[in-house]
Image (tube, rainbow, N blue to C red; front, side):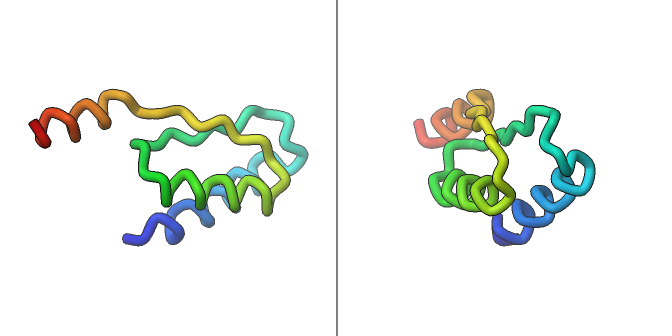
Length: 67
């Protein structure tokens, strides 16, 4: 599944649940730049400030397999 097919609906759901953006929205990613770009674009479209948290466990799994 393309990340855009997941990220856009997730932002729509977050916007429906918190239309005034009173809560902190956080995005957890595995470091994929395309994902981060999509999240940034959706955050701008929804006028939301969204901190991005890097899932280090997932990144370490990638590094372990690469090694």
